[in-house]
Image (cartoon, rainbow, N blue to C red; front, side, top):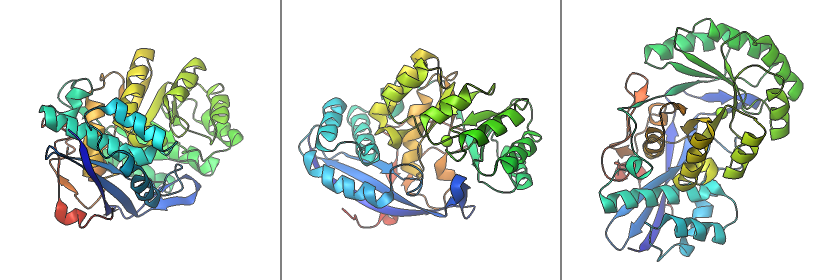
Length: 364
Ligand code: MG
């Protein structure tokens, strides 16, 4: 089987809640998503998606994804998409870095492998554990009482894990965490995600003030060194996200005892092939994972579900159902949230059929 063509589509994904706000005054109201179709001479087409959280979150942006795919695609024509190792090696040889450009291509090739073998991607990634898995809900940055109110609103939708977007003024963030924690019920999980927004002294103030609150601290500061300093002075369980962008950083963090949990985003590390490596290493090391992506719609959600559902449940800290945050459906057959939980498809590949009327004409 050979790759004969790679196309890309641009889709806008507006949010049900109007906008999503996090640290540094950042906000997105309409996501700019790129869906990739990898065509083969066997008549099988695989689909992948990449959707950066705007240009200010990671070194990634939507137009950059499409420019990068146009640059990379000619190097991949003629390769066997089922041979994920050689495919990834070729991508890394042809383009240094830019993992988010490679991610949708890698995901599409896993979709092809599944379709060609009649096996779901979750099975190819290791096999499903149980019937479904738990999701977290991100709570957009807002006034403390409004964020606390959203804990109750989302619990009403079945969620039990709540991730507060903090990383602002330390005093306000302490109030956000305290107000939200007052709404928790037995079994709930609360995460305060600063998204690199605090300086080290600010993070230490917040961590000290919430030392008796049942809350996880996620990515307090910009650099690994600052996060490590905070980690060594707090008694709260600790999650690293933005700085964990490849396998080597997991090894380094594990050696330093720098985190209890990592946030693994598929496009941050270059696709499902590399995300699976990191997932498997974390399971071996005893590090739990939130498995998700920077954002996306139905196809990203299907890829997340395949990786999350094939992760041992005691190591799957949480996952995300991005397709329920956005108003546009780009594919049929994608996993849907039920009572705060989700399941990977049982169909071959990712189990999705893109809605071509929504995708429109290819931009590449
Ligand atoms: Mg995070």
